[in-house]
Length: 66
Image (cartoon, rainbow, N blue to C red):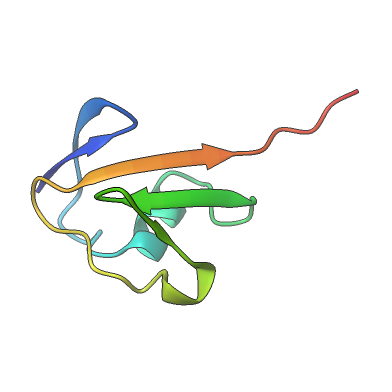
C-alpha cells in the first residue's frame, strides 16, 4: 500500500493497516505524536483508524532538549 507520509511517498508493509501499527513500525509508539490522516487529526483513542492506499498522513513528534 502506498501513502504520502509527511509529504513523501512511502510504501507500507502489508501488516501495517492502521495508525497504531504505523506508529509501531516507525518506532514512534512510545512518543507523544500528533497524527493527521487526510487533513483530519486522529485522537489517540482512535489510533485503530484504518490507513488506506493513497492516504495522506502527517506526523509531528516532540523532541526534548535543553
